[in-house]
Length: 304
Ligand code: XMP
Image (tube, rainbow, N blue to C red):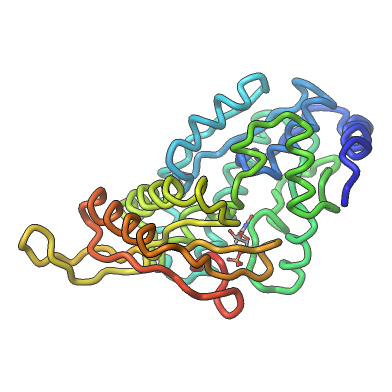
């Protein structure tokens, strides 16, 4: 286990030695990039320019909260929603989807880096990211997805030896708010991997609302390692005496130690019923709600 009181000053010193000019980081609001941003801010102050890209694939209210939490920093927020949606038109294959989101992200990030004239890049890579990507399980877009068209003087990875629970410990010690320290993992490609098939604005809106309901109902009470909703297709339903072809939502809630394996939580029936009734009641276009029982393996945690 990492010794937090030793790790923090050492990490700050290392960043000070490495980053000698304008430095950027893609700040997603996840615990990894948030910890890196705070370490770097303490090391180099306003020479750090965190860039938050609103891909339109973020969870409900996320962009607003990031702006509030990191308001002291020189944060640049970029609204790239339309660009991501456009890039995703017609893409159905999961790996291609990840690639498109990853590439669009890098291009937007590169453009911003160029405007800023950044010389150094900080990345929030952690130890398990490296293992999974090396094993070729899925392409994770925060690993290997480096801006290719910019010659940074150095790429700095302050937490690449840490496991997730160690990063959380560091986050607490850095006085980050609980919602960041205990934040569930959220995939780089965002809500796009919680949509089976093509990503459309309508599906993103539906999955975002469903995610918010699932989080409200499960996070505090059951403390799952990860929980979310996915749009998995369309099916026939009856709403107000009329047959509809509505969205099918799958609810996922898993326990895990590090995301490498996972098991579905045994949720009480009444909790599942409440989630079903809220999702079908509050989102007019939803006709059916399912609970995913699959462990990892054979399923992955995300749907794509
Ligand atoms: P899977 O779905 O492969 O996910 O069982 C394991 C954990 O990793 C998260 N995940 C990602 N994180 N970029 C990330 O930073 C990605 O592309 C990505 N894909 C999956 C997932 O949410 C889970 O916690």
